[in-house]
Image 1 (tube, rainbow, N blue to C red):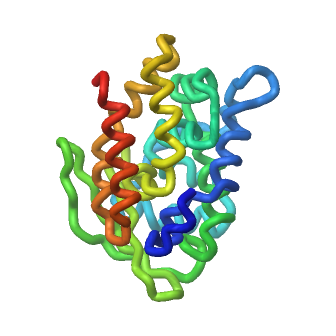
Image 2: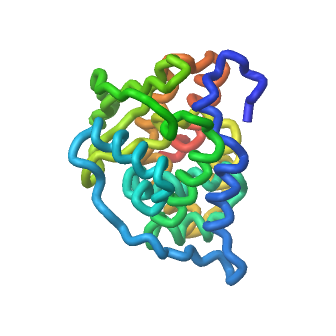
Length: 231
């Protein structure tokens, strides 16, 4: 995951543990059915509230509650980065990826140290508009004093946009699956590609986040170019 990029902030590196947890949920022994034990829920009433609620949920280990604070579908798509099969990802997209999102946040809590789980302060920043989608930046300052940015948008309530916030840590491992989607003429592949195309604005916003290196920005741009090739 490009750990060698020393200027790439730790929070943007989505750990293998995190994505493996997502993958375990996506790919069960009975053929890949997602165990949808977490009911769907609405997002927060405000952008700042979404981050504050996420922090509370992660601190208390309430990952089911945290699942409602990720943009729907993005956790399922993120599982592509660790080899989830197209059938499993498509199933989660069709039937809800709340359980996958719960495990995403469980892994995040384990892999991101004290970020979003320790003593932090949060403040709402500016808005970014991209292709008709409005993102709100939330500045998060943990104990180490190094401010980081989480991006939130309104999707049936305010939720954290995983690709806008953490896309830099996913892009390199999503390029291969995205290439295969273009050559796989199945209904599942077409669904996944369509969903990825719907998240292009998030990936493009990630290219300009503070601390994103030129190399990581290029990876994000390359991913966008692939998933929009037939768009």
